Length: 398
Ligand code: PMP
Ligand code: GLU
Image (cartoon, rainbow, N blue to C red; front, side, top):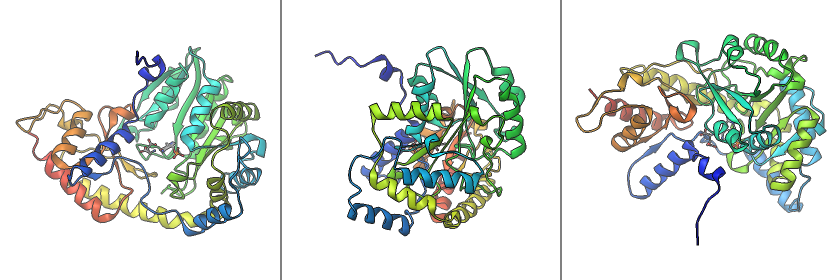
């Protein structure tokens, strides 16, 4: 038999976040004392009131196929959440619930992109954007930013990247991996620019909305003159510590919501009934239920930034949201421990894993070859130990 795979799958890269987390699990299974800070996942358990809603859903026999875009009650809760938290008006028929925000993004890509289209990705970008866009045959166009500009793209940069093939721009705020948060003023400027290009759609990924240390979260869809060109993506994975429940959603112009529903209807159908009931409880609750987790993340961020300042050769920004730091480690390129020479961020990541037993993710996966991503979604003790290991391992390089 000829085990010939499709060009699509052959051209698709494995998710580097999931690959590093798999690699660390394998090393741990071999008995190695690896600390994995590779996957971006809150270490908290899902709050009890959400778990209770799921148990009730099982007992009440919410165990059948669900409407493709999600239960109306859940979409009502999402519509109310958009109004309450973001001052956005999305009717129920503008909302589609999917199997995680990752799935929402895949629906968007397949529904809106054609092979010749370009999608602008301010870099660093979340690892899966690049591959999900490629899946539709479209071309991701990376727009590099620097630590000096707090990893935020300027309007002039976006303008210079727009061509007659540009169909979309995708970004996250708070950003995975840089932790940067766009201000209302910055979003307004981007909105004013994109308004002049009515064929360009903005994908605003706001899944870290509740992990924002700047105060109020700002959505680009709040500017009425651009709202018809925006898809707001969100989910419960991060803010409510519900990664395993697999619930993400979009608020979008109806024609886009309809297309995503059509796509989903042929591919996965409506997502898990029980998870939808759990998500409804999460989204109906007062957002203050997320504050305790956010405060813990903020405390850990301070700890991590203070400890990392003691490591020579790391350049750091001060992330305003999410739970990552993204240090520039390029000062180590060209250095060696006598055995291994470090030429790039991927090699440094592997050196830290093999010699320091700490799993991080190379910046190359996020479109930034000078950095590495460190997730601080873990306990303070583990953070202290892992930064000690990183410091000692980097000290081997001269
Ligand atoms: N967007 C960003 C920026 C993320 O970090 C993640 C994390 N996995 C996702 C989307 C997808 O989240 P999920 O599929 O768990 O809802
Ligand atoms: N979003 C998380 C991360 O960036 C989870 C892993 C994934 O879905 O890629 O690590």
